[in-house]
Length: 395
Figure 1: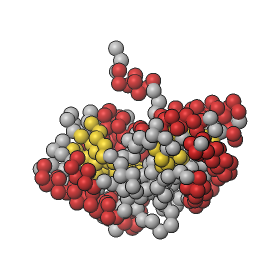
Figure 2 (figure 1 turned 120 degrees about the vertical axis):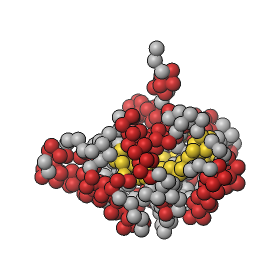
Figure 3 (figure 1 turned 30 degrees about the horizontal axis):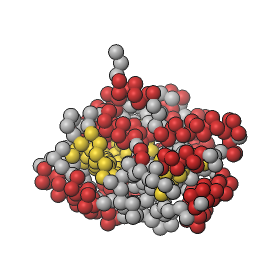
Figure 4 (figure 1 turned 90 degrees about the vertical axis):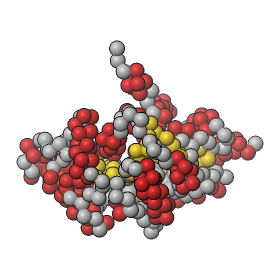
């Protein structure tokens, strides 16, 4: 016998991956330039030149047994210290190297936090729209994910529904800002109110309610928009970070968990994160890329390209009659489908070679996600197809 749950997960990819695989197949049939694939958040902006230069320098000038060998399970101490120094300098915190655990990307970070916290009967809360894999991470840890319905007016949090949803079984709240799939950045006012509710409910129920902040898009913001740093607003916070988007390194799988030094029983919680890493086999993140990020702290790829893509696509779709919230971050548009059934709308879009992801798995039926981290010329070439799709619904 094998695990039925794992069999189910293995046999059916996520909706995003299914559409991505379809796009590759369709591209091989008619030419990739004729398929407008907006399915997956795979950065098209290349990793900066300084990434290549740093890798070459590491390979040429560092001891191979160091850069290709094991580090400590939670990551090399010098790398973790560099991360702590950077965060302290930027956000005015006072964390240390011993509050970081380096991981194979944010997915590993989130999985470890869920495994470190969850016991049978626990509930995790998150806000729609949300990244669908949260459900996998939470349920695999033995807990249940409950979702606060979306506030489709502006995709900020519905605070009244959130406060009513927090209960004695609530172990943690997962927050994602800038948000995948809406691109919305939660305002400082929203963050403060979320934290205030959590503090009040923790006191009411007599146990800590943790905040898990999923932050792979932290630097991907446009204009003068600021992303509040959660450790400065709520003591019992985990930060799950990835360099996949900020440095265009999604395939290298490098990130971290940061455990707040002000967390209740912080040393035990950090030890539980280490235990979760051990149980899941997430020990010693890729060594070469640990040393890489230490040398590239505070730098990013060319984010201005995403802003250009957003401006072109958002303006054009609004002019065609599509409805969507203007994203202040990440690289997604969350667009209201032109019929109630988003999956049916996506199937019609396929006839125009437009590949979109239905919002149902994001907890928001009736919407579709457009990932605009593609070439600008692909966006420009796709606009007539979007116009033809809209015209079908105007007949």
